Length: 481
Image (cartoon, rainbow, N blue to C red; front, top):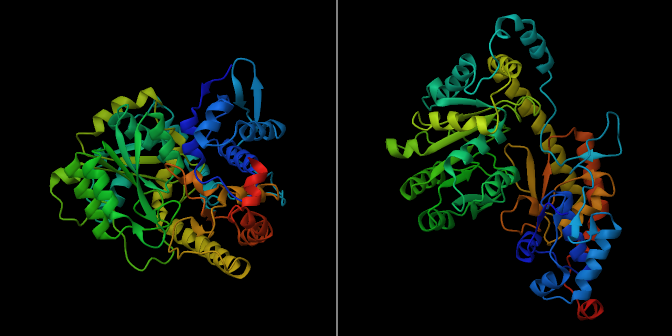
């Protein structure tokens, strides 16, 4: 039995720009294959019936049947009596290479290795365990000392904050989900950037929100005209934004853009959820960026409509599951009350390590900037030399480059390099409503040698993928009808 069923309309929306110069059945199979690998279609999901999908795509049923057959042969779907074609569990999105495995480069996760001094902090925290293991361990709010450290950092950056405005969570994803649980009701519209952080979009979809996209570009930033239209006309309950080194584009909001979003959202009665998990990953930004909501001259009503989240996942280590929410004092009790539905608190050991990390934060951020600068410069240089036809944006910080390919072939390229030992997410993984086949996120968080090799693999696979993006000729069309 299938766990759920995907309608033909929903699948077509997920597919985006899938047609290329390959035979139609193969292009369709590759597009669905990428959706399965990225887990945008979950294992156990029944695909639409061949007839329904053919009608929706305006293809022959023979073409869709051939695509499904291709997917069965590659092991991505199976035919189950009474359920039709069902997506199989074909392993994790990206297999983590074994230590010393030089054949696989995993750039699916844009996160650097742990700060080198982290293990010493774990030892120091554990040595003091007798002081804090006597507590219950079910901490829904967060250790006072950690909340104070987080609040003090906001205050030092120019946004006065009381420790009681802070809730410590198990990472930024937990924070996003908790805010979503409290603010978003089924069927609510939510404004969100596109491209965007995909797990945020996943959390909002899980809440049955209707996502309304606001375009953001690596070079030109946010489409403020579209943003104003969405916020004032769609009346969203929430607007999810990443104002600093946006993932995946790397764009950073100007003060004017921040003010526009804050005021328009408040006028529309929407809460702004500002995700600042990448805000501290500054390499050489030409101006100082302040916390979202600071310096706007905003009235208290606007300030109350802003919720900020952050974490130590990118700055210290992804395995240190410490995040936080900064919210108005009226909202904090509602967030705390809703938390037990998902989790019963933040682990004590991680909190103690986080307290020590905040004491060393200037040193940590300096090391991070050096590491990311080396990775960025290596990647930009290699791409310029080996793939000069690609558009490589200027990145002053963050974790990745949102590279322009010049053709809608991101998914075929991601598939082609995967078979060569390089794991990347295709552009549509970061989309809200399909698209982004002309872009590829390439993180620069890996060691320089791996980044150089990754570009070599991309260059090897590029001619094949580029040809897939060339216009479909009449001869090809005749062959696949």
